[in-house]
Image (tube, rainbow, N blue to C red):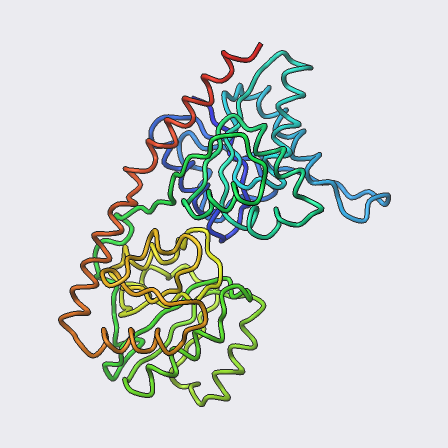
Amino acid sequence: MKIGVVCYPTYGGSGVVATELGIQMAKKGHEVHFITYSQPVRLDILEENIYYHEVNVHDYPLFEYQPYELALSSKMVDTVINEGLDILHVHYAIPHAYAAYMAKKILLEEHGKYVPVVTTLHGTDITLVGKNPSYKPAVTFSINKSDVVTSVSESLRQDTLDSFDIKKEIEVIPNFIDLELYRGDENCRRAQIAPNGEKIITHISNMRKVKRIPDIINVFAGIRAQEHAVLLMIGDGPEREKAEQQVRELGLTDCVKFFGKTNEVRRLLCMSDLFLLTSESESFGLVALEAMAARVPVLSTNAGGIPEVNVHGQTGYLSPVGDVASMVAHGLSLLQDPQRLMEFKMNALERAKAFGIESIVPKYEAAYARALAERYTVS
């Protein structure tokens, strides 16, 4: 099968999932063509069966904002024709599913070729962008015109059905993880981070407002008041500067470390005792799954799809959004009970196995097969 993958080539969850899925499909012998405006950060184009096609958007004085959707649709058409693609898999409804529909129409009417489109909904395209009245008709249209639609969680699926007039069936195919990447602890040197035996607490995000970064700092401050601990803040974003100021005001500078964007995430997780996730909205919570794969219990909110990953009282604890006191109490209950902490660590790993890549990738292959079957029903 020759698959075209359209995604955002960034560190965000959708880009990571799209890239990893494409890599796995290539390993299974499928030919995978990534179509986007820059090379995805986790993509090795030297790997067998993987190809990258850059979307070039030219500057025109007439346009204040350059028409990326037009360039993307044209690139999809060219790639389908020149590379003989069988199917397009687009991640995000806007603008990717919308652009894919235009490419699909051009291919059918100008070239007599029907190319099915699989659309995967990841979250922001529905919960934030899609609900904007300016985009809502386009989002609804794009989803309904896709051959197969998937979402990364049941929460996101229900949110989509509640917010849009959707006629298509939406299948839940959760995000996945390659557990092999988290095996072994030969590079796990806790003393580098916690030289005096402190407990290590970690947070990873793009530090946007929706992540509620002040809550992260306040939860840590509450735990730190009763337990020697350090906080690792991994990632970067618009809330980082405020977080650094908050840390200074609370007198926590010596025990909070900001790493920014780093390729050492797995090494830092492997030495962690707890993972904090205080988001007010998460379609899935991929970082929580990554932590669990590294045997790290998760203290999280109960927002969106997080409860579908983090099991309260087994792999960590769930708290209402903004309930700092609850998260502090749950954190201390684990950190001050080594046997219970170890039990939760093992539970976290076992739960992560349910999202192993070998279990999830075949579901996408089945979705592709259904989409390909659609072309035989089109007159």
